[in-house]
Image 1 (cartoon, rainbow, N blue to C red):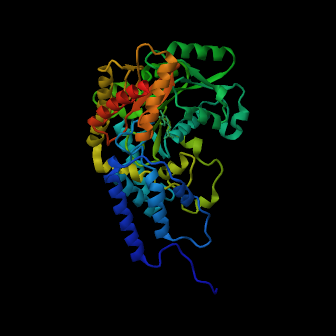
Image 2 (tube, rainbow, N blue to C red):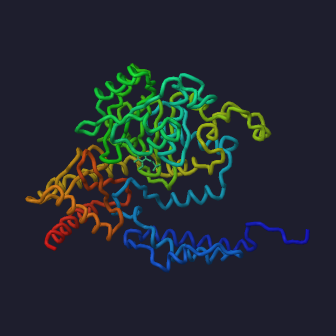
Length: 484
Ligand SMILES: Cc1ncc(COP(=O)(O)O)c(C=O)c1O
């Protein structure tokens, strides 16, 4: 061979090390001053720089990092800022960033073969402990809540089918399989239902009551009607923290109904599961552990870097049989005879085969901060939302529009004499002005036909005064908009 051998390892490790130190310094400085960071929208120049053509000869590590520093980083900070209470978006943390670097260094592989297996199992055991789940639940880390929900529903579908779902798929069903959820359920569940081949018509959206909880009598009636029409009801989805208003279904009631009707109980507790760590709100999640499967994530209300979620499943064998390769994967066999432990490793419990050691970040972060730190943070966010709600109640110009159950408050600015349409226009105007200060500072939603502003706190950087700022800013903006 007459060409030089290639590798992506640097020729000069000291230069790479120096760049690494610089990046760590820059990142820590950025996070240290995130409170003061402006909301910037990408300039023409930045977009041009980002969208350059792919070079034959690379620009080099340093130059590429400069592009990141000058043209990407300044246009990203909004959801990690202290005054961000829009969509349920995680804030991450400085130590979280460092754990990502460690994960990158190890660069994943197939969990279950080396130390990875112990880390994975330990992190899952800690999560079960925090959520009061029995230790013998099966569990797998996923990219986030959507994948965790998909995983739970896949096991539900395969386990409850009348026929061999793995072999025959949806084409084998004689009775159409149907499942139930409240009309406040997150859209990712519908996507899972579609991707699982059930078709979104199989998902029955059941109305909620004034507390945004699924109406059990309506659910019962829907199941009865479906049975009468020859359908096969197989699963009910409960919500631990709805995305609109932070509501919780009654899991004990759902469990009783699921037992009576022979349904799988899947709970979407993407962020709300973590009320389990609070003294004041843990009762909302009573009965969570009675689920057959739970989707929870760690990148929202556990403040871990994206993307990390987790699916827990009561029936270990059902979980394993849903995802394990039906036909022998001959090329993996050469890794040696895998133990039973290894066979229930992560790559047999979710869609991906190759995994980037996802358990390392929950392992590192849970170990570093311990139960009490997370308990205090969750409690703080719940208290902060209650504080905001109390402030809004104290101002005659605001109206709370949904019961404040957990970490979300829905409200609007009101002014006597304005019609519903004018009120909506005014509130939309307030929101638009807040976005100029910090994109998605709060968000809006429509629930039960009413347009609402919405603040949701999963932010460990928020301080009490930030909520005073929000209330004052909204008042000031509303008055200005009404006068203009
Ligand atoms: C209640 C709920 N379920 C599921 C999801 C989807 O989770 P992810 O964004 O991690 O895929 C979200 C996202 O906000 C959510 O709020």
